[in-house]
Length: 325
Ligand SMILES: Cc1cc2nc3c(=O)[nH]c(=O)nc-3n(C[C@H](O)[C@H](O)[C@H](O)COP(=O)(O)OP(=O)(O)OC[C@H]3O[C@@H](n4cnc5c(N)ncnc54)[C@H](O)[C@@H]3O)c2cc1C
Image 1: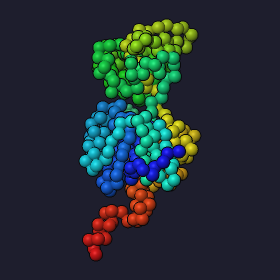
Image 2: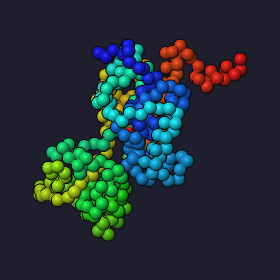
Image 3: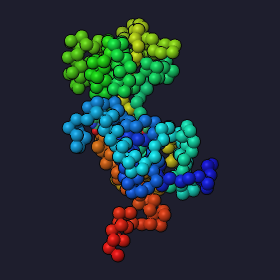
Image 4: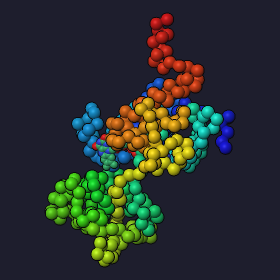
């Protein structure tokens, strides 16, 4: 059990610094809540695309650039940032203790905005070679493979975006997937296959990723049972995203997809814990939706903390009330 008695307490700790968490931070710190945001990176999934065309206010903006703008705004209002991974959350009396790889941090309230994490292929060699040729982000890591031979594994828009991007960067590109045909969204890729920019290996699965210090080859298996090794420098796993919410199990209620069950006002099953964005059960996973949910969760957290401190009206309301009197 953690003792919070002598530790510094934040008004709110936000887990995850992407569309949802950064928007929440803009709101909480602007309300003068002492805000700490803990995240493995800045930007989350938005970093995986160079081309966001549906975020209001921008006809077209790269995910990195958009997330930078969010971060700048949160920082300007006083949000503190910690690059770290949250490993555990404990309820200590009425407050919360957040455990990371570097220490423990305490808060009166929490906002869980840790989104979704790339799904692993689950083959031998993958874990050992992560970051050494095994990547889950074409836009982030593609430039490291300039002129080299790489494979993309996956089907669907995420894999197609990766192929589209990498085809302009790498020397040789394979697209590997288990189903025999491309899905409906693959017209652009069909054109690339015809023009020989992409070598397509349908009905094929990756059996293992091989290499000592870096990826050297992958072992493939066709639906007919033939296996062979393909020498290459990198492999991009683009097979979707999952909720990795093990560390909040038993703290807040989750649905069957391990998403946090959240009410319209961002509250969860535990008083003082709020949630927003892709990690929740909302049906449409989009940056603008996550941002809106972040604002909602932040305002609910603000009202919760105000009530906890015995102050019921919002600070802007206080100013108006004071000005009137
Ligand atoms: C290829 C691609 C293209 C897309 N294109 C668009 C688009 O054009 N328009 C659009 O609106 N949306 C698009 N999206 C969807 C959009 O990116 C997501 O809906 C949005 O990023 C969700 O934001 P989020 O903050 O909820 O979570 P995420 O973006 O998933 O971010 C979660 C954050 O939490 C951090 N985190 C996770 N676990 C921990 C932990 N244990 N400890 C600390 N930190 C943690 C992560 O590092 C990350 O910073 C796209 C997504 C992808 C993958």
